[in-house]
Length: 353
Ligand SMILES: [Zn+2]
Image 1: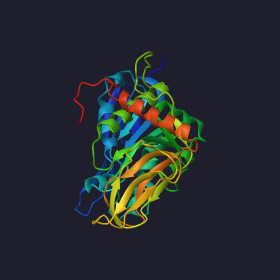
Image 2: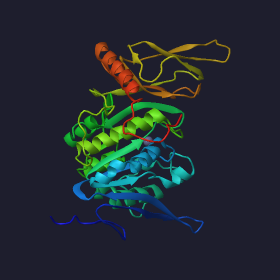
Image 3: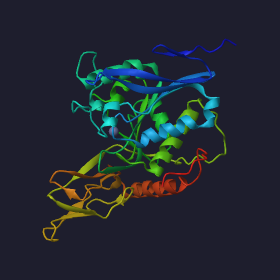
Image 4: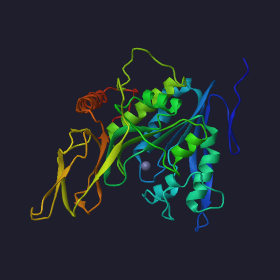
């Protein structure tokens, strides 16, 4: 059998069965320092797809950074078929500043496809897209909610793309949001280029949250198994959800007045239309206003900061018109959360608590 060709990235050649870390030059800082995007390539001995797993495209969304660290430590990678391209920190600028954004205040996930001569954001997007994304056959992009917000672990995907839909199913979250492609996002340009892409959203910015990390790692491994990149072991409990319930619409519920916000609905709650999710009041407890669910569904995102201004987003509710269905999703979520206590993929490290 012909030996597998090496994987080339910049000047580095990664031979089958090897891994290499490559620093992709991003920009020259005004300190006369060169800034790089660190990339690790694991090139399997056997043929297979090239999978990109990326995190911290928003520089303060760090659960995915830890997911990638654990992914790269898995002993199963010795049996890898295909190539894993891991980019734990895409937005290096934002990561250094513990910020979602770039120094020019742009959102990197709205800068794609980017350009060679545009703003810092456009240049970073261009380098990442042409140098990394377009070298890959599949993409898993790891995100969290924005600062002071928390997301229930979920997959966002354009289900019209059959291959992306299959990845979403394999990832095995109880809940999938069939969401449109936002112009300028990584998801939109990858989809445009015919590269199936899913976004994993879980947890809060600037935090390490074990359930979100564990679910994301297990989901990524399940996708790799479904793509034939890792051997599948039948019968083994993999912690995935038996069924992923798809929501085709979701909406943010916003504050109707300024005030101090108390929530009574945790993430994953099944809510009925008009149900009270929380309250906004002034410090004396006067002028109290209940916050209602706009429709029947599941709370998939939530604001954690009690001090709110009028118009601020409080709850993200995924719509499930039939109450019975929403109830099943909530039950599935509860079972899934319990299943996270199982040790999959196996690890010798203590959990983050
Ligand atoms: Zn994000």
